[in-house]
Image (cartoon, rainbow, N blue to C red; front, side):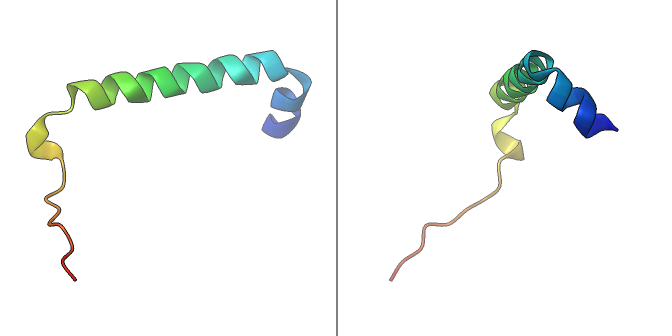
Length: 44
């Protein structure tokens, strides 16, 4: 099972986590402004 693989290798799981986080941050940095959702501020 995949869960046993990551439980037996916690360092590998941490490295995969860090790589995925860095990939997400780098992808967020190159995302064009036009791709952000259009959010209007809430007024009470």
